[in-house]
Structure formats: structure tokens, C-alpha cells
Amino acid sequence: MKLTAKRLAWLKRLLLGPAHRTSNVGYYCMQAGWSEWNWLDRHGQPISMDEAKERWGSPDLWSHITSDGERITQLGREVLMAEEQTIDGQRWLKVDLALDDVRQELRRVLPRWPLFHSHHEGYAVLLEEVDEAWDEIKANNHAKAREEMIQVAAMAIRFIAELEG
Image 1 (cartoon, rainbow, N blue to C red):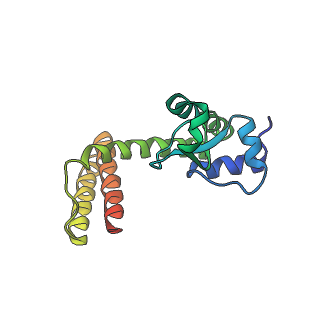
Image 2 (cartoon, rainbow, N blue to C red):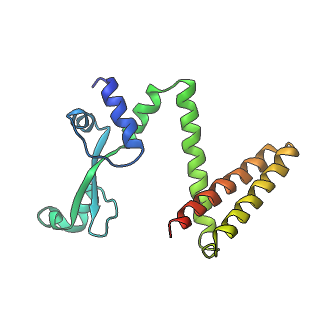
Image 3 (cartoon, helix red, strand yellow):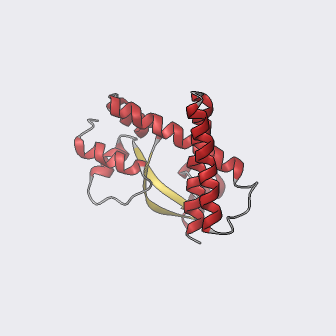
């Protein structure tokens, strides 16, 4: 199936998260295997149709799952990356990899530390991480500077998440 501009735009939109389609573009992406229904179990957790069938069997599964729009598949991601083998596409791939590193850092540190007691504490922790990164940058230690910047990003995201409370 041909990857048209509209289909490309739809797949890029799905990179941000599940979405509800407003035209038949999503249908064609699903037909090509680039996207799939975003099934959720009763607790709101994503679940594949195969997992649902295995867990509840075909007749019962509809009482256990709901659809929350459409999500991109691994094949859809591969199609996007192949389409965007430009400088910009490679930059986005690096961004995705960096975000994966930040998520991993958050999984490592969140269980260790309680919530920030105040906005001032959150700012101080973030500033400390930035200072540590700056020290590594000045020392021209690229690998350590990258590690520190991952920590900066993780603390910034933690701060954003805790500000909502």
C-alpha cells in the first residue's frame, strides 16, 4: 500500500499517542498493518487483541475490553523511519532513543525518592542536576555530560508531574 501524505501525517499523529480517526485514512493504515485499535482492559491498561482472546476467550472478551482510538504498530514505526531517512528523521530517532533513556532513569529514581516537599525543592534539585551537567560539559567529558543531561530531563519531567498535584 502506498504511503500518501495524509497517511504519513496520520502515522506521525499516532506517534503522540492513541487517537480517534476522523476520516478513512486510519482505515487504510490499519489495513496495511501500520496501525491497530488501541484496546484497553477494565483497568484502562493497553492490551492486544491476542492477549484479550487468550485471557477471556472470544465470546466473553467484549465485556472485558474497550477501544480507545487507534495506535501505531511497530510496522508503522518502521515505515515512518524508512520514509524519514533524512537528517530530520535521524534526529527524531535519536530523540526517541534519548526519551527511552529518560524513562529508564525515571523508573530507577522515582521509587527511591519521596515527592518534592515544595516547588522550591523541585527547582533546587533540577538546578543541582544542571550544575553537575555543566561541570561535565566544561570538563569535555561527553559521555558523563550525556548521563547528567538524562538526569536533568528526568528531574524536569518529575517536577512537571509533581507540579500538577
